[in-house]
Image (cartoon, one colour):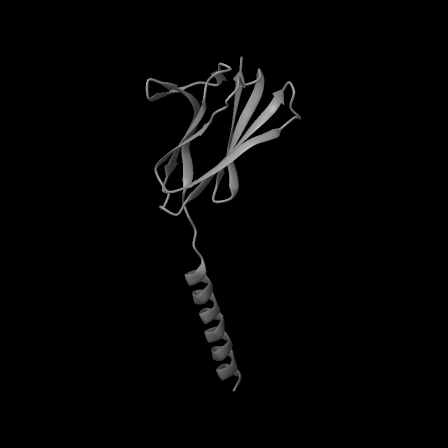
Length: 134
């Protein structure tokens, strides 16, 4: 009788492990490369310093990313005159794999100071890129 109970408990334990394994989905997606850039005749040019009238670009290259991978960019004015520290300027989210281009423009001149863009992969902060406007 004891042996029979042990077999039933073992069987239930194995079923629970199989069920957990089937419902578990681990993504190996990662940010392979990310950088801030300016537009140079339609070609992104890496930079960490922008002029006041430029559009900010953030180029993101993913590796091992399925098409349902979510990448979010959150743009901040870190230390800019006339703005509170770490003021969120904008957020944008894309779903997909491969390469993504985020951008942020302004109808006026960007204030001189320091900025950053935080990159989130499937909801987790993965990378922060610092840049400046001079």
